[in-house]
Length: 413
Image (cartoon, rainbow, N blue to C red; front, side, top):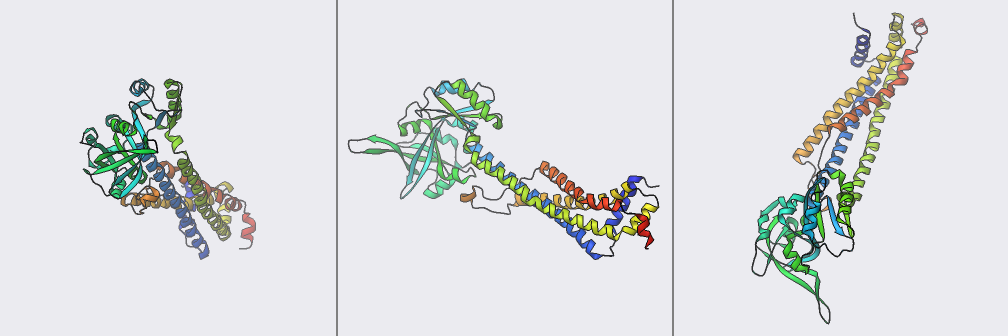
């Protein structure tokens, strides 16, 4: 004998598979399934794209920049930076430190010139803080320690190398706005640099506007002996950057300030969070529309099956069982659409990420293709939301079916 729950499932699934006297009900049921499928798949894909952009930008920005920067509030440079860096490296959560010197310069080769950020580094320490110099297309990081007659070593980004038309071994002219004062004017200071490497960070802005040299060469060019502009820090948990930065600022003493990767990229990640919220609200309406189709399909089915309902109730079926039959029927429609939507959404996301199906202009979007990072947790809450909405759409038709009077129905049969 069928148990009560098996009976309810059995009738609900039988109604789902049965042929309709009214073809409109079958059509609306199919549309409901397709609507839920489309809504769930669209949400999975859109959130995968949002996750992809956020995570790719986050990883590449963090690979190119430090988690925390320590600077002087007076912008007069940090002296005795080796001792300060060593002292702060023992603070909790600090993994690595690197003193650096930033300045904007003009780099030129023959008739081509471009403004870039020149960063003087200690190569052994820099690679522990950032990953940008681990991605060299040509040359080697060891080239930064080499010496050349009348030239210093430099590593440039691939886009900058293409723009200037230079390769490893070529010489470029770097002009600093920090020049010599003469009786008539300020004469810019310049030095020749030999290209010893070309990096490819995968981030257009860095590849086109950044260059690296050793710290000593940068200090000579900018006439800033034994001074750095920033001490960079890498920490073990990037999301604890604000509290670690505050601790480092206090330990550094008066006259110092800190900035974090969160502050530096606040507008970008705020825009991505807002985009995620808007995406969920707008595309989620597709599931709501599909739920309305489920509501209509159930209302029409109750009208079609009123005689069957009366017979079941006259044979002993309770109102709660009738309610459960139509509720399970509607939830089954929503569940089937959700399952198909998850399969479609995750499948498209995998294909898009694996085969780079949507290319982008790197100079506009900083990425060469649309990244799809579909997270399992997104699928769980999307499935829960879709099935919950489907369940809510069944409440009125199911209650209406449970409240039918079998005597009144069978009287006219």
